[in-house]
Image (cartoon, rainbow, N blue to C red; front, side, top):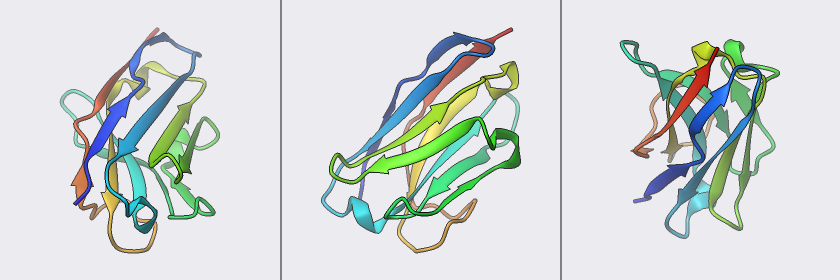
Amino acid sequence: QVQLVESGGGLVQAGGSLRLSCAASGRTFTRYVMGWFRQAPGKEREFVAAINWSGSSTLYVDSVKGRFTISRDNAKNTVYLEMNSLKPEDTAVYCCAARRSNGLVTSDYDYWGQGTQVTVSS
């Protein structure tokens, strides 16, 4: 079992940057693939990015490639999402998730955080 708590959301102007953090409880953080997802009002949840246990491999949805960077600090049990060149269409609740099985995938995650709101104004 792992508990996830996100932070770092807020209101930012288009073109700005935010850094989201997701702190995980437990001593087995390195066993999990970590992912970020987002859900905008009236839309389905969307995969954003994922990172393997060592941080050596990442996966992104096309719409954020070149603008967002996922990373992790296993010593701090924390995964990050650095978001640059933000656009109004990035507005959503962003959640982190943990997956017990290996493999960078866009679904089938086991544990979820509550989320943090990101609002990008035009």
